[in-house]
Image (cartoon, rainbow, N blue to C red; front, side, top):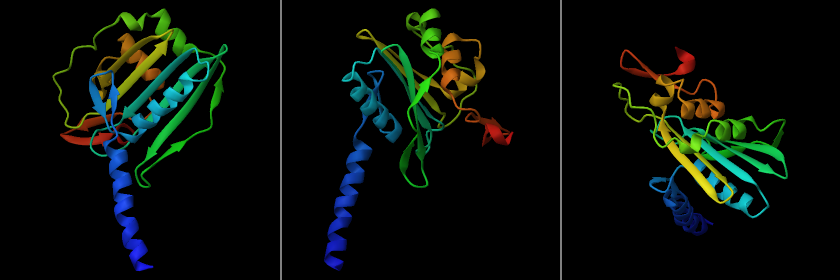
Length: 192
């Protein structure tokens, strides 16, 4: 029995390493090895094969020091809008997946198209404030064989609430997930 236990340890380590190094390309230029992003890409790719009109994937790596955060997938299929939420539970090193929800409206899609977010090519200017391991928001939408994608640091989201890209991020962002600095100490928004 001990030999079997010792034989399984390398297999478990190899499986974990493969998952960790299985990176995805965010916006075709930035690599992500976050499990949420990997899962979002797999879900997105599976939706492509099932007559989906439009797909949005979004993730928020709350701060980039260790795995944390969540992701969302919104899609339109046959005139209906659906949502799936994913949360990374770092205590268990696994992704929790909620049930697929049918949404009453497609306001997130409407906001994107009515505000022509796809023609906005840059984020707001970076603030003078710098933060080590700042969180990152990832947004990608695909429709009619077109794709629009952007990444945005969390500090830019916090300090530019009037920006259209920031407003779009805020439609996805979970409450109480901002990380802020008070007197040089990083704290979460809910502990202000």
